[in-house]
Length: 352
Ligand SMILES: C[S@@+](CC[C@H](N)C(=O)[O-])C[C@H]1O[C@@H](n2cnc3c(N)ncnc32)[C@H](O)[C@@H]1O
Image (cartoon, rainbow, N blue to C red; front, side, top):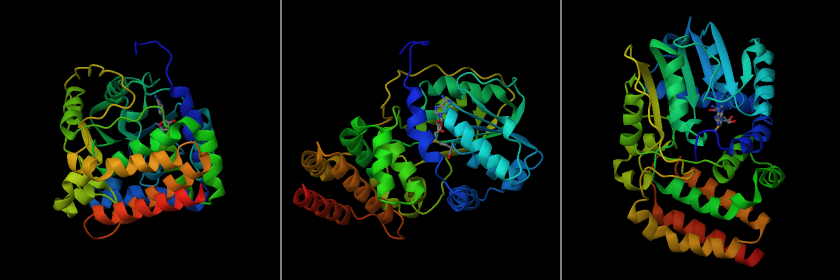
């Protein structure tokens, strides 16, 4: 897509706006705790990263990154998001916790209203791969950081059973749209973080994944060092599991790509824009994954297609089963996952 052409980023209001708005105080605290756990697991001290710093939460969602940085001593925290509802939600959450809501603005990462080299820390968690122009946004993150400034960045690593499943669920559900999906998921009374995750995975207009090598090269060219992905995380993070259970590497794919980067003093060479395929994957799915699950997921698709309710309820069940399996302190069992999906397909057939 050429620069200046219409984008699908308007859909973010539906995909993220409504789901981020329904976090209550306790769910927001839980959501922030995952960030603390990831810092701890990688031996990163949040106080030494944030205390006394001018920080930005880029693509803030409900502002959990901002709250995390502020609670560890950030001097100021600016927030920007493209979704007007997320701006309202973040303002509300910041104000409720004694922070300045006026620093939250609506806008795109692709053209941010901050001066060159004006920030000490940029937080950008789970955003770039959902933007229309990830490379343009990456250049902007680098531009606004001071030399020596730091950046927390998370993008999706390519391949792995989790993204393979999501790619198949998207094929069934995306056409129903985020709003209808949200209405059904609310009926199930799932924890809000699962509702938000499923809507994001199944309906977001841009979902790209990267190989570690490909993304690290882009980071270098945007003027960053420390471009090795962090090895640890919470129990189900695929980077964490790759390290905990090396025998699972083919099933986990590249693993989640989280970085704690440093901006160099050298002028960045702007990253050139990749072709804008909204679903591009940095690498094909591993043959073992396709061999084991392609026919099963074809069968799933054939059974549930045409029924909104059945598609959403069973996809939520399958995704939760996978998450639970990937949270256990044992290697992933493709056979057990296969059996669980088969049982769900049988049930779907009965309920149809
Ligand atoms: C998956 S959510 C992540 C939210 C938050 N960073 C977190 O970790 O909880 C992605 C967020 O990026 C925002 N977003 C997507 N494209 C954007 C863009 N071009 N500029 C600014 N925000 C954008 C969405 O509205 C959404 O709030």
